[in-house]
Length: 157
Image (cartoon, rainbow, N blue to C red; front, side):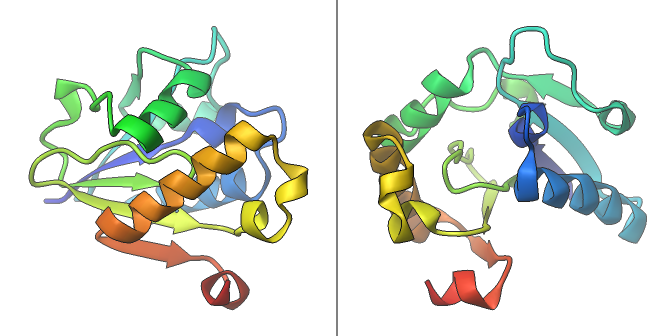
């Protein structure tokens, strides 16, 4: 059996957008395709906001910090690690190159890239986040076991 840890932070956003739709559809589809796959959801701390109801069908781990701290630390320091309770998972999947937790020893890392808007339209992003995106994307290119581009356009970018 394969155990997958899946980052669901985007579901806590006021406007989850395309990444939220991707997460909402992919996670249940994985379970339906192979019920033997173990799926654990994990997310940053969001100050009491509740995840969407369907997520209650899956074990869920809340991380100790929010995205303003975790994402830059993951991108720049490759720290903090995921909790020990997630160390046995075979694969860590993040649906965003902006949020790439360090995979543990023996874990594979899969990153989905939806677009490269921060490269194509940098003026739309705060300087701090542009830098973090660039550093995180470079890390993805070096260390991810698989990168999923959701469109041909994104793959070409």
